[in-house]
Image 1: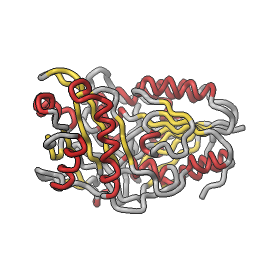
Image 2: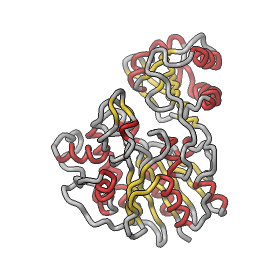
Image 3: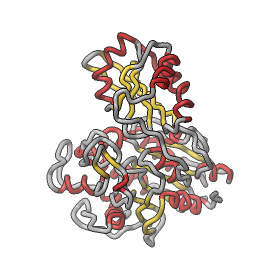
Length: 398
């Protein structure tokens, strides 16, 4: 029985979103943003030489139609990683989002067949950023006299700025970003990791009522001048308000495996088995599932470090390195797919590391299908990805 592997390259957009002018980084619209295209251009120009060199080399993604998908998305030249287009060996296309967000839940829910039916709440770029009653509620729940931060901030910057005050006072560091998020940072030892997770879980329902998409626990360790975040992040996301691809698969009596932060994004709805870790660890888990996932199953995976480590930090070289690492590793797994299996490679939004600001960018995303020969899919919607997977597995969609 056929299996399906749906793999999200978090933030690997390919430009061309028709409504990009309605989404912003600061005061600058996202018109013209192209995460992968601009990385390719920077590499070709010798502007991404830290830890790598030369044109972006992603031969496995190219043979699946990456440059063709980018050309379709933008309506122009793709500027392939080695300066030339290759004939795609699988079905390929470019997908356009309709949800009114350029964030993780919006992209993933719609890829799973459920466009977001509301506008997310975003906190204003002022200080304080949060309503006084919300800050008081968080402090009361934490058992402290107040909170630190109360602003838009980079996570690494704010723990550097406020980490020592947090350790001394015990007050949680609360901040947000251009996404619909409420983030709480706390020291794993002086504050306590479990206490932080319990705090985030306790305040999440109030934030969800406000249509804030996620409450994110951001634990860190270290001492003044040398604080660093740990891998124990956890997202407390709004539960999807309707049924999604994973529910369809389970209704057919099939098994669903989640790799990465899929469990957090969907509040574990429709998931049988969860694997977590950094991207290198997740690639190992995905490889194990290519070998061992049961017949008829769905594996839904997210590789977040394109976005979290390189896109938001506007690190072009780092993003290029990650692309080349991912390409090499995913190529090995594609070659191990069984007869009748497909692997769909896509993304949830863009995060152009050459762009202004530090926010996601509104872009179309690639849809590359290994194990399914052409013809080209064309310009499709995010929710069509769910339909494609469901059709391949032979399960009914809502």
